[in-house]
Length: 60
Image (tube, rainbow, N blue to C red):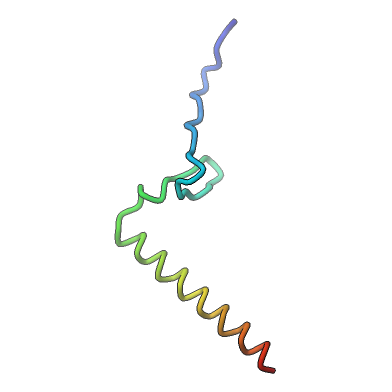
């Protein structure tokens, strides 16, 4: 039986943080530390603004 010439996809640990992209996945740890810190800061900012908007809806 002939084997496929396509390389096998690496298994991704379900606990490992990764970004799903059209061509596969990229491990969170592959990004430089300053990029990871900026992403986390932006994510926190997004969550805070969402919480503020939700609080305004409740108080109205």
